[in-house]
Amino acid sequence: ESEALVEGLLQNGRLTFDQLVGRTISKVPEGTIRPAREEIRMNFNRLVYARYVERCPKAEPYFNPQEDEQSTSARRRVPKTAEEVLSLEQKVVNTATLSDPERFSEIPYSMEDASKTNDCPHNAVAGAKRKHGAFEVDEELNSTIAENEVLWRVNFEKFIFCLKKKFCADRKKPKLKVGTHPIWESFFEANLTDKDTNSVTSSINGILEKLGQKEGGAAMSIGDIKPVLLDLQCTTSDGEEFTFDLRKMVEACRNEEIESLVKKKYGQEAFTIFRLLVTQGCAVETDQIIDTTILDKQIVHST
Image (cartoon, rainbow, N blue to C red; front, side, top):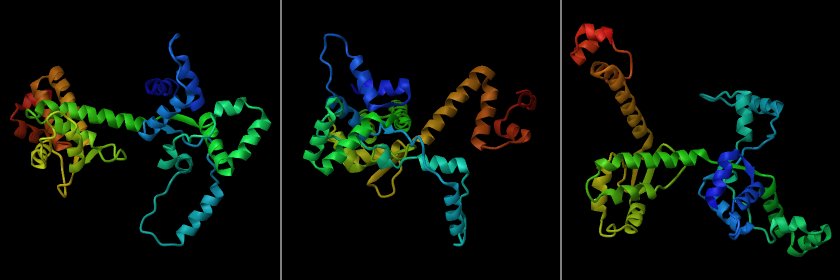
């Protein structure tokens, strides 16, 4: 069901939960038991909790340029060393952007299923609301809005982050020593936060916990883990938390791929010059290239 929910959002871009329910049920083969709405909601909330799915930004954000100008004028009276100047478009985007608690707010569970509520006569619904009390009425209303009006979409940042982790983990595996694969896998599984999509940070206790769930991992100690992480270019400031720079790893792999293409298409000399330019990170004079690479002047000029 979770796969069908994500597939629906990927294919359609954004949908309400009610639309996702209809689509998920329609995908069930004939002759098999159809999932209940509450079951689909439970799986959907798991995706939201794990940040694979998020609420879309506000469709019609309220932004008053005059009020913004007044607040800006008031701020100008207070001296500041530097103040970021935002364009009108950026201000509107900021107004439409939801906070993290709003983006990943799950669909609340109501006392009655929203679909059943919609099928009931008006009097019965009103009577039920009076019976449940004001608080439960609000919960039911919020649930109905979240199901039928709120648009949901896939959180691509989360998926890209997961792909980065998988790519970097797989890329490092051939360089791992025998018996250290579980440590590397546990490091990625014990990631503390998903807010930073350019690095993975895991605590030593979290790594030990994940490692204990793997075959042969329970016998490993902190003394076995730390040297492996440092050997894999993880950094630490206190010895309790280790960080691996995904962006640096991805960039290095990208450079390797480009260098491989340059070498294959233009030859060893071009590859040598290209690597020098990448390493320097700036323009290099021809004479310096000749001195550094020990290539013939004519070859350097022709390349």
